[in-house]
Length: 335
Ligand code: PLP
Image (cartoon, rainbow, N blue to C red; front, side, top):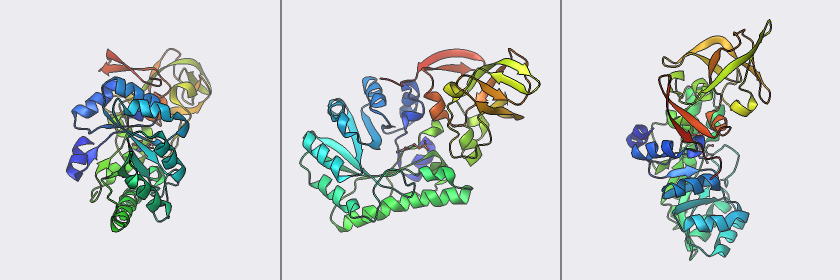
């Protein structure tokens, strides 16, 4: 991804919510990432404590946590997000210098101002005229790339994302408001984007680990996926077997990719070969159901559907070289 963003002429600001792990964040910075993106203040605090000094909290600002924002902004460059005039007012009342992005909805339909709305002009104007706030620019997320069917549809979403931001930046320019940063990014959109003219940075996150959903979408191959869950078969019978990786190990999130199972199983991790038919077919809290009969005690390596949600079920990664555990890395679910 570092090579790709360099080729496209945009800075890479990876979303670390995928791994919540200082060691992986450092590897991303060593490979050229210009800052990081976080989704919670807990992630922000953990990474600031570890010395990361340029972070975007890519979540609509939570106005009852502004004291924590003020504290972090004194220790690092913390860029926050608004998509309402109410949030801008709350930040003005905080009277602290802050970098602020406006979140734009590029078609995903989750958070963000509609680019043709009056708020899309009013919020940047207020930010750029504020004595304490600094308008960093426009930020959007193409989460709808996950439901795009096929490469062409995914590319269309990536271009829709780019055009939403660039189009609004031009509108702001005509009003005399400068948009220093134009930030886009999801892993599927970045896997197909070939022209990001007018964009300054990308924030994909999932690519650091990938998962079955990205395989189904065509963003990567099973051999590219880095996070797996090791489980033991605990029960075996005529209907199939049960392993000790249930919903609290894998999460119930099947993502929006093509959910055909609750997790695939590696036949051979090194070559990326997956079992053709054996897969998880149901999850309860601690039980993972398999329709294939495996012997009790057999260990299975599962490729999760959505690595971001799976990782958030655990406190640490076991780092492997071949079959050998060479390190343990903390997952910062809390600071
Ligand atoms: N930016 C924002 C605001 C997000 O919510 C996300 C993911 O949810 C990302 C970037 C990264 O996208 P992905 O997980 O597809 O890499």
